[in-house]
Image 1 (cartoon, rainbow, N blue to C red):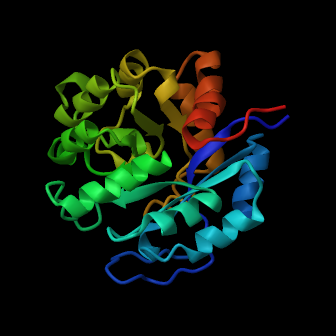
Image 2 (cartoon, helix red, strand yellow):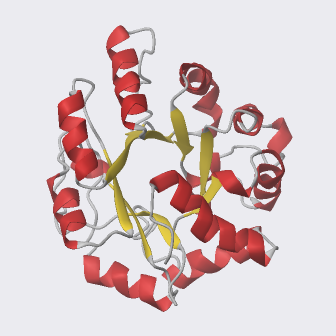
Image 3 (cartoon, rainbow, N blue to C red):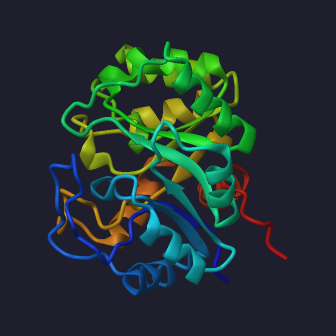
Length: 268
């Protein structure tokens, strides 16, 4: 029986370089290939995240979701002016959140004193969507507190990209741990190769203690843009066992936590 979800993957046939992107992948990432990896790991489905190099053009992602079943969801990129009506239509197509990729060229951070951004966040809350944040750990203190105060559900990419080997000495990472009290912050256990810290086991242990397994999900980050060819899909799946020793905790992170965060139906 297939159980569990890959909560962070990218699938695309196009490799066009979008305006404003400084990256173009070397090859497509076809849907059948990803589905084959899911089958190999006995996973039931997953979450497709809009590739940053395609910008706000979410058409391919929506076409993919239309071909997939109930065990799949999507996360888009949207401009500030996206209307509630547009977002409601996306929700009907299986979209559950918006991603801010703020590491591209050390991107400028959104000005959360701008009422237009506040309105955008309010639309996310009205739809019960999350905001997925891809940001270096040492920059999290510049943005995280204001987002957290606003009450939007936050999903932090790639273990928070910590910059210090001691999770309690890392200002950005410590913010994530403190946010665990509110129950509105989730973290993706994915892409350790994107952090300057080599051993992230202490950080995962700290998240299990402060956030709890209820706020952790796993993702493969396939096809590992900018890091292609350095590991296999099975490697990324097996990393979870190296981070989380308890088998029931791993089962929860793979299956129950994604059901709650992304709105997958319960089995049976």
